[in-house]
Length: 444
Ligand SMILES: C[S@@+](CC[C@H](N)C(=O)[O-])C[C@H]1O[C@@H](n2cnc3c(N)ncnc32)[C@H](O)[C@@H]1O
Image 1: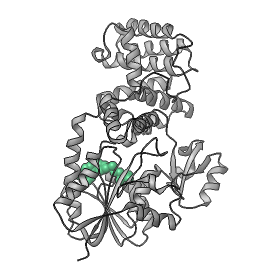
Image 2: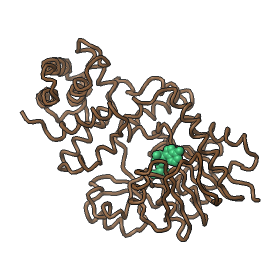
Image 3: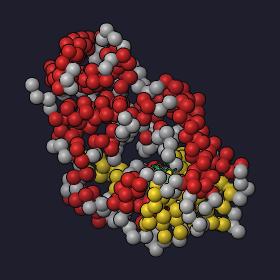
Image 4: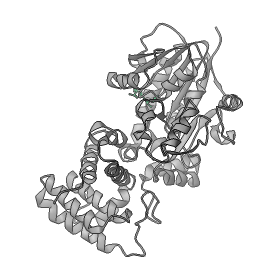
């Protein structure tokens, strides 16, 4: 029996994610899978993201009906079970026999024929245990009542400690639903063009140049292919705007270049250096941000190989990414408690090096898409203990400047700040969770 292209691709991607450090969103948009027919690609995305978002809930059901706990199952067997169980539990429109039979076929095609009986039996038990009234099957994305938060407990506990229980719940709920796609549109005429092509848009919640896709495939438009618009979360766009204006700008951790692009757009005539540790990611950045004003260099921001000082520096540091779990659900299963401290040391090294390269009177923005205070305020505070020549600026003042200039449309600026810092929270705001601090170097 043939397996549908979407399920075959979902199986390959899920096995790859569990066995390497690959990201689901990158694999889904890679050349291999992007060429699938749009309907197949839609189902593929739903299967991959759904399994990753609800992995612990799906595994609980597998554990109830399998002889062995999920952790002891062979990866291919577990993946075929997760795919089948996710469809049975969450997707009303998939017939149970298709969910079961295709998972059985997948395991045969993975040359694990001997496990076909187990996959068949476990999925059939899960299917028949679904009492109609207690069934968690709903439209994909809506959290099933009582099915748990599907986040590692240690992470939820940490958010409850840092933000309070209601916000911790709001973050989890936000992570379990497909987030809206936001774009930045510099030319207003582009909106009409996109709407003329059937893309339904609404204004962004935070920014004047941000639009949110309500319906339609933005990646199929000519404007997207010609790089006249970029998909970028509003909070990420806002961080780039906080950098402000300067004649020489260094973007220390720049790939894939979302923020570099905005820096170039907002600072015509400035010299911008985009630094990136990984050369292949630097090349991707150059492709995405072809502006002649942007020079890309492959270098380690912990040892910046530049003698010149910059009047604007952006450190968008590598981080745990816990503010982006709605888009990158695999992160929550990979991240370990101890990773947070390791990341903090790395971020501190980068920030300390970047402080050295800011010109007198210049500004540095330190940002992450992490919700963890250790990666955010703690890094800034520790970096500043070793230098007396910087002060932390109040982000609210910058937000007011952006509002006056018409760039920022958000109503309640108070909700966007925590102390002097920018702090967006998924669930509290309709965007990723970003942190940013603005540091100013004393004039020389
Ligand atoms: C959070 S991402 C940056 C996102 C980017 N600013 C944007 O808006 O598209 C962090 C980037 O820093 C890079 N990176 C990691 N360690 C680095 C280092 N020591 N020096 C420079 N770049 C580094 C990573 O490869 C990654 O591309």
